[in-house]
Length: 418
Image 1 (cartoon, rainbow, N blue to C red):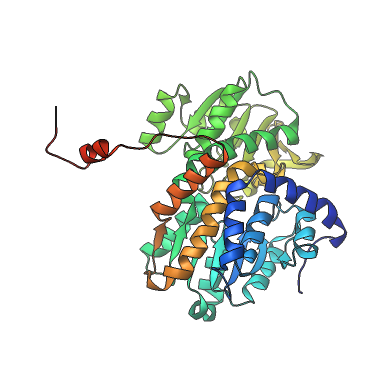
Image 2: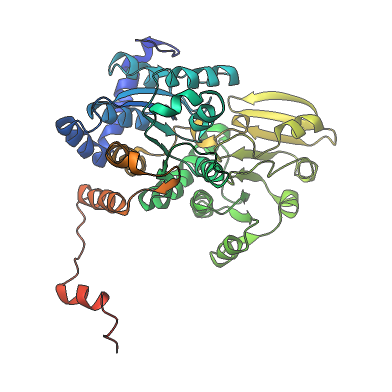
């Protein structure tokens, strides 16, 4: 079996972590047992470019139990858990191409490695697989039934491809499932970003002015957690509706240039480029902390920061201190990459349980229906979304009411009124 990981000797530790996460992922375990019996993915080759974490390991195991050949590489150079990669290779015989800290060239070499299997289904977190296929590996498209996309940034890229009529096979936007973005994006990102911030810096959040760029579902979760820990939260936005919502939630809203002058901590979650750039850096306080929890390391203009700096030095494992020409020091966390996965362990397994249940059931759906779909970006079928919510409640031992026949009749009727 071909693979590229840091050290196969780390497998024992990785397996323990994978099994711990499994206990927090009961919905995915139910699906795995079903897949093991029915083998709905038999003969299907899946190339996956996802964060190589304990949660992803359990998804990969589930897909393999369903009969698929699974090939996995990292969707971010800093998010790989090397011991998990080792266990996937040694204990579960799943080819992995991922090493924490790999450079950009190695990152794309690993993408090429997982594509060498000529996949029938692609699984993306950021759309780098799809992008590589469409730009460099077009000969693979004839074998591909469809793909899935895990994150907001990737869905934005794919919808742009669809709009330009560049997309050559259908994609299910797993990110747009309610059982994904309402929970994984909001609660997962909120908690894990705070976790990454604290591990990287060991600062006290209470009393800090905490600037959050963007107010999508990920930013909502972070704002909630930062506020709950005593921070004064400021939101910067370009969307008037989201800005208005942030105001109504009790947060201050202002342009980034105003926030730059007063913030202590800045975290970007927009999915866009150069959200904090050359005009903002000189305005910041001495000792300001900058980080990103958006998918790509483009939200903070690092090249502009380096241009303005006299020097930089590493002062903690995940902190680089830049000294500006005006003498102020700016602290950049985790190279501007995903803070929650670079400096911490990513989202808790119990919330990824639903996200990866969506991935697994979407793969099953695509094997059955993918050839009938157009070259578009689709939402997760509602029946899958609701079934995952039902299963999650069931595993939490929570019961809910059901509509009576009379109530169903009332809701489906337009004649009945006051």
